Amino acid sequence: MIKKSKVTLKRHLLKTITWRIVGTADTILIGWLVSGNPMIGLTIGGFEVFTKMTLYFFHERLWYKYYNMKNNINKLSR
Image 1 (tube, rainbow, N blue to C red):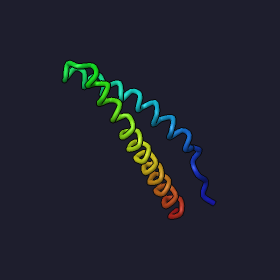
Image 2: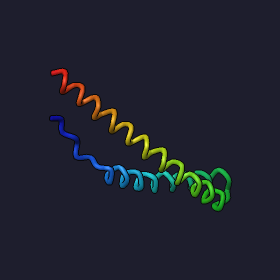
Image 3: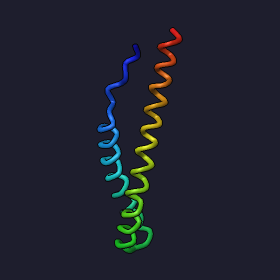
């Protein structure tokens, strides 16, 4: 029987949220610096927080599934 890793959906969600906080702060700051207007930075950051969080979550899940699939194939071929 092949064991699954202990990495859980909850862990992926927490990583997604914490990384998004860092990324959004960076986007807001860059938007502000480029435009000279903090409201433009906040507007850009507000939109991208949802789109990038969703993209990262699915990206993380795909990598996790790929890694597990690769490990399972390697274990079966031994």
